[in-house]
Amino acid sequence: MARMGSTIDPGPIDISVLYDQDNHISSAIWDGQERGVLRCHEHSSMLEQWKLTAKQIGLVEKAGFGYFRTIPTISLDNSLISALIERWRRETNTFHLPVGEMSITLEDVVLLLGLPIDGKPVMGVTRTPGKVCENLLGKVPEDLNGGMVKLTWLKECFSKCPEDAPVEEIERHTRAYLLYLVGCTIFSTTTGNKVSVMYLPLFEKLDEAGKFAWGAAALAFLYRALGNASLKSQSTISGSLTLLQCWSYYRLNVGNPKFNDEPNDVCFPFALRWKGRASGPRSNSNIVSYRKALDSLQPPDVKWLPYKDLDPSSSVGDIKESLILRASKTVLICFDKAERHLPDRCLRQFGMLQPVPMDVPRWERKIRALDQGSDLSKETDLQLKGKNQAELREWLERRLRIVQVEEVVDEIKYMEWYERITRKFVGRPESLESEFQRIVAAMREIADIADSFPPDRMDSRDRKSLDEIKNAAHKSLMDLVGDSKKSRRKIATKRKREDDPTIKDDY
Image 1 (spheres, rainbow, N blue to C red):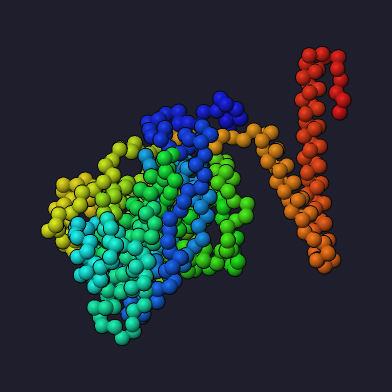
Image 2 (image 1 turned 45 degrees about the vertical axis):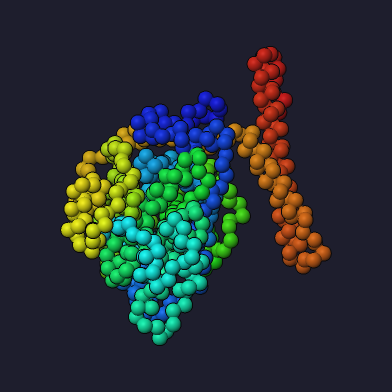
């Protein structure tokens, strides 16, 4: 490991992979320009106020969101999310960690969120927003600016569908719910409480909606959001932050919460495992401590195969077949967004050895909209369009792009290569003196908190426990100060002895 001091080179030594390092947030942090915790935009707290009828739930399931709708709002750890983003690289769509590259893949999306990862790409034909709302919702909001509709308007108008409503009205309420659902979760934006109307036509025929690869689109959207947030000029993050946080909980031993109850490992989707987590943020969590933990991450801190013993195939028949796409080296599409899915860079997440991956060509991150006459329900229209767009063609050929296992892999060679091309540190390694001062300050804070409790309001058992805490804190503080003074005397005596060999040790 590199030593402390101003001569440390955080990397990359070879900039052929991380060519955009100068614009990355890690460069600013290294230069002492902290941006703090990102503002995290996910607006799912009001979802529980939607009261769906049995008929609506059936339509939601047909549309491909049956599992996803069961995931409750999970309290976000903004500091953990911010620290993870400091290690995300949009040049490779992976996290660059001390153990190698890791990423959120199609496997994580389908298992954590229960969204379909196979099917037609989520894209559509440009239409007039007002007409779309009129035709599919039966209403048009007054402030339909920029093709965005307020989530509050959708909730106020459509959150309660009458049990005896006609079929057309049930479908309108269900479309509004689905638009609200994607707008506050997988397609949440930094604009606040709004969602784009462009998703609404995909819910026109609810049984057809289930044929889209919503999970792949969610991942494309999140990749784009992570890439933007990793730039030092940004201060916000959107997209499925529940996916990002649950991915970290399953795979990294950093910031994992404690459970109020025993976790339920048989529930699907697997994000439900964190439904019973302790409420409220961790009291000792901050972005600096998370950054330090990620900077010093070791192989035992990583779970490469967290879903190995959580096989959903016995109860979820449509999941197993699509899991083959977890290792598809393809392009993920969400309307005009095109992002590369590069499982060849994180093969250990699939139980394979990791060789040096191929170079990533710089790609066009936008895809052209479909022509007005295109019909998404017809595979032929997509195939014709794909002939003219390499990104769309790659998605259509996704099953032909599965990464194969290599027979001979030298992971030592991989790590030697990786050490040269990666960013080793985000934060500057802390000096021993700084670490000592931080520990002393923490111990003093514990002692002060213990001293602040009024003993006259406690019973004898509580007073005894409090005295033990205070004594332990004071003893640890005195030991730290004593060890520090002893170390300083040793250093001073050593220097004197080097100048005058006749001086003996006085300790």
